Length: 220
Ligand SMILES: C[S@@+](CC[C@H](N)C(=O)[O-])C[C@H]1O[C@@H](n2cnc3c(N)ncnc32)[C@H](O)[C@@H]1O
Image (tube, rainbow, N blue to C red; front, top):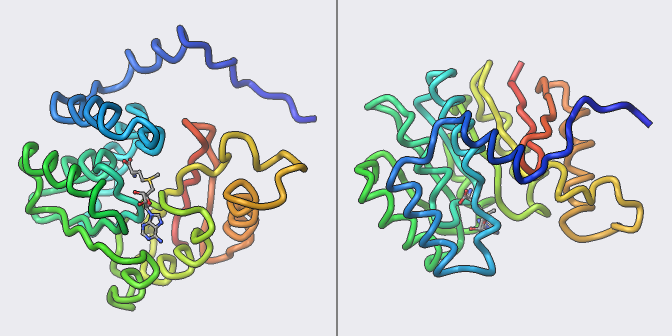
């Protein structure tokens, strides 16, 4: 068993972490609250505040102009990344739900970033295959159905420019990736994906214990 330096994340410690991150802006805060009110059974899908801040930070750090997101939901991660784009930057975000993304569109309009976001409603694999084949993506965020992760990775990696960043969410899948009794479903799919990503010599990857686990992978 490897030793960890991670302290247990108590509610008090998590509150402390949030207090030492950029706060959600008022539109983001309203989006979090309205998502919980309108879609209480699915609100867990939304990235937490510290992860929204991390996504915005990485967009700014990399100077990304061409961003692709797989998994829009009600639009918080897209909003965070779109706000961090330069004026000529564009975010393409992919989902299959008209209902959830209608809520996203309203928040983006309220935030004044709707003109930077191109929402495409279709199975993500179809939308990814329709993107230009050449390496042009600066940053991608993968946060949709876990049984599609390997296929989405395989479409995204060749389209990333050298040095481009691929951010993958839920790579711990609530800890189930190490549960031997989990032999199917999203936990097993994420476990298989993690092995696939680690073995990919086109990418340099680090796995972080942020939120439900985040892998940062750079196109070498
Ligand atoms: C975890 S949520 C995304 C959360 C979002 N990034 C946020 O922070 O609010 C996953 C999304 O993937 C979408 N999704 C599931 N299967 C999909 C598919 N085959 N193609 C495209 N989107 C899909 C769902 O509709 C859902 O909105």
